[in-house]
Length: 100
Image (cartoon, rainbow, N blue to C red):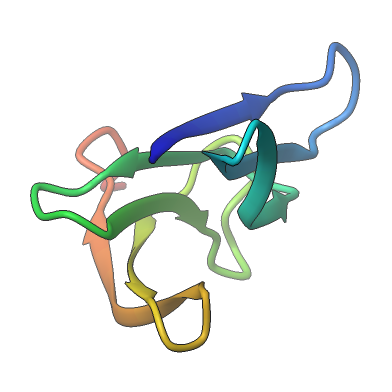
């Protein structure tokens, strides 16, 4: 089956939405959908059925523009449950974060 990741970014506001669809039997079926209020990115992993999500992990003292860390979530497709499940979550330092 064919699948696609669709990312929607509004012209105003800060909500980022992305969805994963499958094309089955002549129609689209939503497999996964997320709404985030921070910058977010979703990409395919190196293995089949893996998605990688990168979002800002804001600390209480971080302005919304300038996170010290990113949260990396790994999702894996569960054929039994017909959804993506989080299998790993890590923090990654932002190399452009202020160190002062």
